[in-house]
Length: 424
Ligand code: AMP
Ligand code: GLY
Image (cartoon, rainbow, N blue to C red):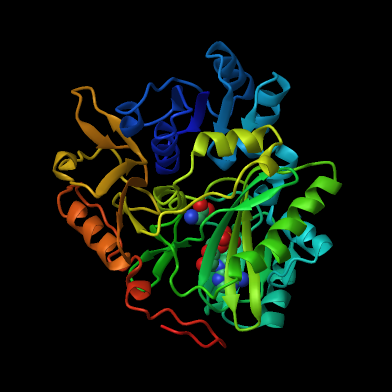
């Protein structure tokens, strides 16, 4: 199988790493990629938002499968153009990707499919926002309706900050606050069949102890030792299957990765958000534990044959990833800083690249807000954390920051579920 991966982040580097390990994948390219991906496989130039260019590139390579990583191209309809050219594509159509592209649309789909989510008001004026904030009370949750790379959400007890955030958005959702830990559950879908992957937890805030602004994600781990037994089956039945069925009945089947961001609240599981693609950085830890071949899985989804596959198999090991972010991220990240120390990183840790490029003199420099995703597996979360931190201590990037507490509470058995007894 010949596979072309579209994208340039650590998620795509993780996909490339897992696809390289699949013996059925005989040729693999990434476009546009980054410096780390380029040291593993050939990278090609393309504008990922240009559907015709992506389709032409894939056709020229005689690719059997195109895997589209980021949401931007999916929402822009790049998967539609690739499929229209007769190629198998892992990634939803623009119509199905609206589940991520518009939070208001996602709410409407969930209402039709009776999927549990936070109550929300969709507001178009400051007056509507003020009324909705007062109806729910603090903590206030204000969300930009459109794509915002995880940074369009403000959760605050400061009413004037909530109003100010809303004023900067065209259309906003004001939501009920959801308590309880969050879980990211991915499902591979072929429009009809839904195969859930191993759950992961993401850390969205920039600072230790969940302080600071929301980011695209600062780290992740899998598995979640504190997760109640049966939760994946419960979410599959109450969230994933009804959503995929609803989209199929609308004539816009979801083919690709459906990402359910969940909160385990005192009143049960609630969907915080849907994404239409693999999450970053959760993909880094989920794929670190995948034992079955990824190419076969994604190809079966893209060609409507998921029902022929066995469920994916998982390593019992734990995986942890920590994002090394540039100075200023998530605000205005500084780029062009030299990255050193990668040669000193030792197994079981490894470094996936996000925003990196080669300078004219060949040295590695930062080229984005999230720069590297340092990943490791271990017999348990504590061992995986230790390996990641040993690797991080080898790396230098001036002004960079990373969280020290990724997977720490889980490793210590301190994650608490509101209203539920825990056995840890
Ligand atoms: P979203 O882009 O919708 O995933 O929101 C980003 C992050 O904001 C989530 O992962 C949560 O940490 C937080 N968040 C979003 N919605 C809520 C909510 N209704 N209650 C509490 N926290 C939320
Ligand atoms: N880690 C959150 C996301 O991928 O949107």
